[in-house]
Each structure stands twice: as structure tokens, then as C-alpha cells.
Length: 537
Image 1 (spheres, rainbow, N blue to C red):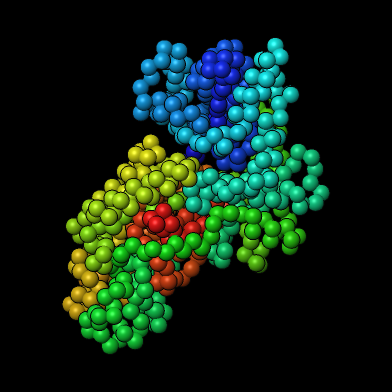
Image 2 (image 1 turned 90 degrees about the vertical axis):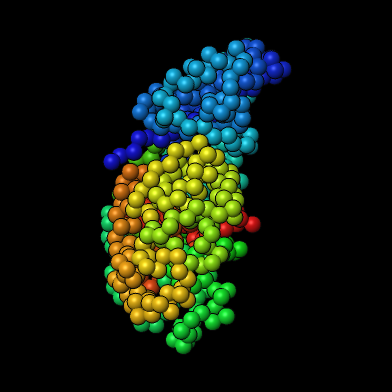
């Protein structure tokens, strides 16, 4: 399944007098690379700011349609009025704006356009175009693309300022653009009109060949790992040591403050990002080591409403170096932002809570966490789809985010939590007391299932791996929020790293935490973030 081409339209309009001499500007960008594909600007005579903004929106959408009629479009504007009205949240009352809004709504089908408000400082390209149009009108002329410096100015400002990615944690497209900018000044022998790139997130030590995801490993846990915290069973903090586990028939008082294996845990207050999604360090390392970089060329035409630069040519994988760097794949990956659901009543009690129990709702604390993460993701932007586990706590968390972003929620059965069988609702200590032999077997092997016919971790890994493959195929090149549970998130991270099963015991994952993994078409995967809870502080 191939996703439709995605474009970004940034538009603005201004009036020197409101009403007064007015103009608009619009730029169409490739969502995957950030490249400028087309610009449009026009002096429109005397008009208000809002009318100019709407005219800029219409022009930008029409240019996008000329380029790619079947595209999906992400409109970004600093006009709260236009964004809210076109999103259907505010009523349009002004008679001059009603026909313009209707015209904008007819350019693309409603389901293929989404709107986002951005601060003015992030809309400088379109703002510059609008001012160029007004400057031309003051001189009695119309704006000409050949005389515009808006694209060059915007590019220079981005390269000089090197701002952090505007997307969600681990946003690969922003990182890839920054890598190209960093390398453009260091790569030797690059001809004019050619840009250089580096691997935008090669998986390290995945053990998978090009075009293949790391396989699910059903091997046994090492013996010394048998008493570590089992992954994915709703735990988060430290667990009893091997010595404590060997001698305790029931939880000791000291264990009461540590997350028991397989249970809901209290929210951690620390954030543990393992990678930022920022490729500057990678780019610098590649450049200084003199590694080969892939070059792609961009070609296009200039003119009002026509393409200024085409999308980059595809880059074929060349294999992985001994140091673990993969060959450049500058295509946009499927980026999964992994959100664990907020707390339920079972979380602070550290009880097993999977897909075979009571399906609890979010607690009051969990609802607050869901709102906090929704606000954080809305501020970061660029989440394009939301996919959720079918369990209530995830659907409630996803709904809070969807309401902020104006998106729908898809349900993926493969993202549900482990079925913990007869252990559902029990603490680790209670399971130890009642089902000691079964617990020991479960801790010793990913193939062992909980008492009463629950799921083994090997079974869950196969289920999650299949869901991953479906989602990466369906959402190639897009940033997707997956709202799910501890087991699926830890499993996705483990498989992305190509790590053995026992690595799951070494990860902490708090309620309402954010992690991120990017999946590339050549089979590489990159873990960008793990257990970020900064939005909860």
C-alpha cells in the first residue's frame, strides 16, 4: 500500500492599514523533505488582513493541487481565525470571508486537508512573500517569482539558526533536513544544484538485512535475568534483586516502593531520552570520518504558482558499514510516536493489568496526564495519524490527543496489552504467593504463559511485529501516534534495536510517557526517544 503524496502549505496575508494595501503569500513544501516546491504571491489592492490571509490560503491550495492533485495537505498558518474557521470550530460571519472559505474548501476534498496554527516566527517564508507582494504593489507592479528572495532567506535563516525540530519527538523529517544542511558545507566535490545527505536514522546492530525488519527472537532468557522485571507488564521502576527474589515468599516492605514485575506502576518523574532525533551529531561524525554520502538532485521550474524545486530522487541502500552506519536513505520513514496510556486505578497499586482483565478506565490522574500529553503533542505538531489499542485506557488517552489535533483515531487490535490470564488484577507478590512455579517459569522464558492460559511474551512479540508491519506499510513517510501499553512499546523498541529478549527487563516505561521509533524503507529502524515524561512536570 502506497500513501498519497503529502504536501505542506504555509500561507499568510497582510494589509498595511487594515483595510489598506494588501497582499498574500503562499509556499508549498514537500512534507517529507521540507523542500520548497512552489511559491505564490499577489498584490490584491485594498483589503483587510483576514481577506488577504484567506486569499493566500486559496492560492496555496490551488498551487498544491496543480502539483499533485491526489495529495494530502497539511496547512500551517499563523492566523488563528482562518485555522479555526476552516477546521469547523469557529463560525464564519464576515460576508467577505464566507465565499473565500467556501472556495478554499472546494480545492481538495475535506478529508485530505488538515489545518494547524503556528506562531508567526514559524511562518516567515509566507510572510516574506506577502510583504514582497505588497512592496511590489506600492511600486505599481505585481510580484514576480524571479525577483523573490523569500525562499533563499528562509533557507538561510533555518541553516543559521538550526532550530530544534518542530515535529514530535523523533521527528525524522526535520532531522533529515538538518543533516543535509550540516553536510552541505562539508561534502567535497558537490556540484551546484546538488545536496548531500546522511543516513536519517540507521538502525544500530539490528542484524537485519536491507528490506527486512529484525525478526522476533523466541530464545530463552539468560538464567541470571530470570528475576528481573518482566517487560511490558505495566511496570516502570526498579524491581527486587535476584537475592531478594530468591528468599522472599511474599513482598518485603522494601519492595513496596519498587514496581513489581507485570504490574501497573506509579508515574516516574524522570525523563530518559536515549536519542533526540537530531542528526547533527551523526552528520558531523560522518563528515569528519570522510564517509561517502549519497547525493540527490532537485530539479524544477520557477514562476508564479509553479514548481521551484522538485522532490529529491530516491536513494538506494548500500548496506551497513562495520561501525553500524547504514547507507543513506533520505526517504521519509514511518515514524511511530509511542505513547503509553495514562494511569488507571491499578497503576499506583502496581497490579497486573492486561487485555484479559476488567479493562479499567483512566483515573482522575490518568485523565490529567492525557490532557498534558495532548497539549505537548499539539505544541510539537506534525502527528498525522493516531492509532490506538482497543482497550479503554488507551482509547481515552488517544481521544484526548485527537481532540487537540483535530484527528480521528484508528483501532489496531495488535497493539493491545498482554493477556495475563489468572494474574490479572493481582500484585506481583500475590502472584508469587499463589502461583510461584508458574511465575518462575514465566520469568525464565518468553515462551511461558501466565497461569490460566494468558499470552507468553513470544506470542505478544509475534502479534506486535505483525501490527508493526501492517502499520509501516500503511503509513510510510508519515508520523503516526501509537497509543498503547508497556509490552507493545518495549517490544517495538527491542525489535528496532535488534536486541535479545532479556533487554526488555532493562527498560523503564512510565504512564503517559513518550517514546519514538522510525522505520525506513530499506529495513533500518532508529530508536529516537524512550520514556520521555517531561510534559508531566
